[in-house]
Structures are given as C-alpha cells and as structure tokens.
Image (tube, rainbow, N blue to C red; front, side, top):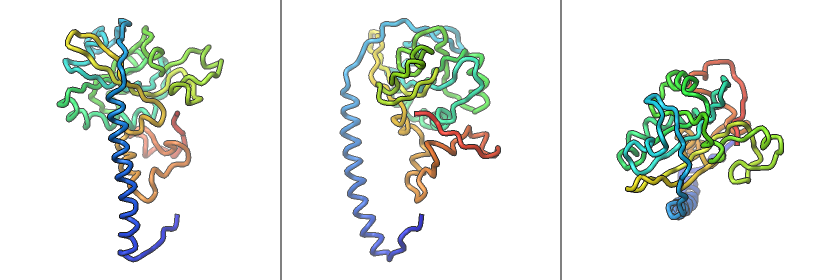
Length: 240
C-alpha cells in the first residue's frame, strides 16, 4: 500500500478526525462491557469432573478460591498431533496477564478433550505455566459449544458461535466465564467464539496500530506456534 505523504499539519488534522472515531469506539466498548456484565446467569448443575495434575477435580475446584473463572477452550483433539496455532497465540498472552487479573478475583484454566498425558507435553513444550486440564469422559466441551459429534458434523447445520458460523470440527476454540457464589454454586455467565476471542490475543492489539495491520492472507495465515517461526513458511488459516 502506498500511503499519502503530507505535511505535519495535514497529518495532525487527519489524526484528530480518527481520534474522534476512536473515542466513539471506546465509549461503545464500555457500553458493551456493561451489557456483558449484566447478562443473566445459568446455574451449572452437571457434575463435571476434570483430569488435572493433582487428580480429579470438579468445576468449582478450578476457581482456586476465587469467585470468577475464565476458561480457554483449547482445541486439542484426543489422539491428534495438531496443536492449534490460534489457540496457542492466545495462550501465549495468558501467563503475563494472569499475574495481574488473579489479584482482581479471576482465575484462569485451559480445558481440552485430550487426556492429560497429551496435554502436558504441549504445555511443557510451549513453556506455559497456567493450569490446563482435561475434560475427557465428560460432556463439558459439547455442552459449551466447542466440540461436535460426527453426526452433527455430517449434518452440516451451523451450530458454532450460536449458530452464526458455519464451521464444524471435532473441536473448535472458544472462551467461557463462570462465577461462584458464597454457597459454592457455579454459574455460566458468558461465552465467546470465532473472532470474539481476538480480544484476548495481545499480539493483534499491537499489529492493529501499524500500517500493515495483521498482514494476513487469510485469517491468521502467518500465525504459528512460537517455536516454529524459523521453520519453512506455510499458510494455514485458522478456524472461525
């Protein structure tokens, strides 16, 4: 792209016009965040039991004593050697952020259908320290819209992202938020899928400020696992 080359005064005028739009977006984002906080809650009655390095744990245990829990639904299909680059670039942002949000009453956990024996080598390879547990043997992924049965995939009816995104695989990405009251009851408060999860990818926040933006040829076409950027180039668009 060839940019217009202008004087400093002309640039300042254009920048102020953009600033007005940015402020509109900021105020709209504040309004949307308030609506998100005001969503009704749904009580989670299913007794999910997750496989963790410390043994079986229920959903309430994953809060680690806090009242809020953020779940990354990490695409890791049992028996597959594919590690989702999109899930990984989000996961790369987590450990730095959680040093702060854990002080504001929020815990984090990644959850995948793969067994713990397949999760742990990935976590160690990537150097992540956040908790990552397995939902194997439970309906958790299916109940929260990030896993689909062969029958659902074959039918081809849009189910992902509240039926708005025609993308179905065994496992897809998403995020969910849960809250726990003083009685220990757990509630589902929010879930996001597809491009809704971009807000949690800090690399995009930096790139979106630059002239080239995300520099994509297809969604996340250049994104890889962070230890694979020196490997031969490939173009693998991420899901959703």
